[in-house]
Image (cartoon, rainbow, N blue to C red; front, side):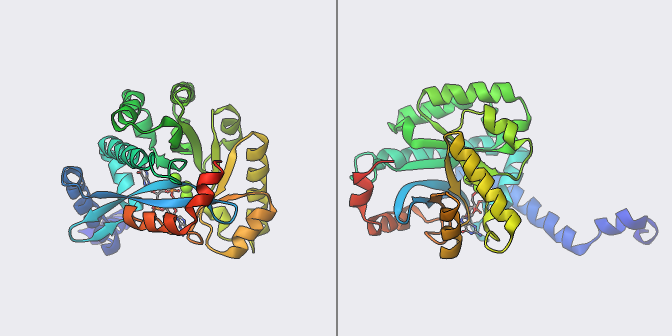
Length: 287
Ligand code: C2E
Ligand code: MG
Ligand code: MG
Ligand code: MG
């Protein structure tokens, strides 16, 4: 019968789509129990200022799947956002980051490091979000000034007044806010003006071809100038080569995150990386 049912039906029976849907269904089935089973892990990607000073790390969640190995958040975060698991998962991410901050607090050269966590719109808009974050900080003993929240523009399309109010409460407790993937959403300039932000991140789609595409270079320049003018730290994402870094430096962007410096690392590897990056320099000049 499918033969007579027209294009839509044919599309439905596309084997690739069916395979994708099956993978998604499998992932979704395992996702709910993954949290209880302790299958999520955080990796940390250093953020670097100048040429070698690590100013902080971004926490990036991975799913250690029993059969599939490490599953990327790009695959399961959208599912978790849809089915609601993002709320308890996001809570776990924040608790784990706070525990890491607390562990660093007494280590020379580590105490100044901050951790940025990604927070989805659905998570940020939960009525208990503020209480959850403050509770996690208190229970761990971590310093609120070291915890940064990365929001994307997609968070901002709902109730902007409520979002600003919530940001202000958390900022009054010392937390910082970063606008992630900047330039890929919409109404960016209006939001940038109104939001109580500390940092803006240039999306890696603008960094990738910055050397060959004058439009990307122009956008990166515009974001850097605008961010600096508004008193924000500007961090470029996805910096993979020296040439990209030099180009960013030339346009005035002095903080970077990307494979050039380090891939996201497990907690143990991260300690080795930080030890290698002259801990005394980090201790001397807090940012
Ligand atoms: P994001 O927040 O924009 O994170 C940056 C992504 O770029 C990470 O991908 C990182 O591994 C990747 N990246 C960093 N440097 C480079 C580079 O030089 N080249 C390239 N090609 N890629 C680079 P990842 O870890 O796969 O995370 C993807 C996205 O998943 C994140 O994008 C974030 O939106 C989301 N995500 C990750 N962890 C969490 C979380 O705990 N909660 C929520 N809500 N979302 C998360
Ligand atoms: Mg991020
Ligand atoms: Mg980003
Ligand atoms: Mg991005």
